[in-house]
Amino acid sequence: MHIEENISLKPYNTFSIDALASFFISVSSIDELKQVLVLKEYPNKLILGGGSNMLLTKDFKGLVIHINIKGIEIVSENDNFVTIKACAGENWHEFVLWCIDNDFGGIENLSLIPGNVGTAPIQNIGAYGVELKDTFVSCEALSLESQTLKTFTKADCNFGYRNSIFKQQAKGKYIITSVTFILSKKKHKLHVNYGAITSQLKTMHVIQPTIQDVSKAVIAIRESKLPNPKEIGNSGSFFKNPVISKSNFDKLLQDFSDIPSYPVSVGEVKVPAGWLIEKAGFKGKQFGNYGIHKEQALVLVNYGNAKGSDILNLSKLIQKTVKRLFGISIEAEVNIL
Image (cartoon, rainbow, N blue to C red; front, top):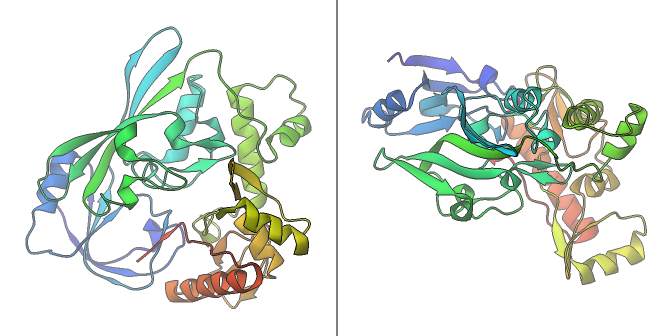
């Protein structure tokens, strides 16, 4: 066990914020994780996965535990379906590509989402009409209190839109160590009617798409709209798309006839936060070394050496302005630390 001191977390968060960890260790097994969790000389601990859904606003005065547990295993399969267990430290996109290479379908719409497998269930990641819960079977998580493993079924996780038990009752109580999925082996059910997938497939001259084609289309769309975190610091979509009542939406239509929406239930609709932010005049705005991406208003970016507090203050300004103009509260997807 090797604990380092005064380590920059810049390589470990996709916003590329240069915050310092007083102490740092990367763990590659559950046994090692258990040993670290019981170290009483480090009472203040922070669990770090892929660092894609967090904004560091200050140095961390404690021990950062980086989850680097790897492994992908086929648990069971039949002619139609395969059950796969992926460890928490696996990169999410690389896991998606592994599944596609093996012609396992169900998560191709979730291609190129940043982060690791272990953090994916926490906010029930989703894109282009598909959510993690659609293929989720269960996950194993280590209790911080007892250092014992617990299995959470789909029902246990209480998944919602960018939400789960791990953001509610179980927040800060467990570390997900692996996730199990059920994927199709044939007769894949494709989801191509959300967003720009259909038009992108036409551009690619694809008439009868495969899961490989859908993944390529999603990657092309995301690369055209979203900055690569390796080039420009960001955490993908900073805000959730708000869900509002149909009656409120109808009132907004009177002043904003072009406002888009997606039905959620009989009395509710989802409004794209990116549209609200762009309409509020923020898209492409730059404030020194940080700002809002020119192609996607949902994405706040660090152009270089920005402070986390700068980006946090910008997000608050956006929320305040959207609330004033539209009467809609937009909520941050990322964790503010």
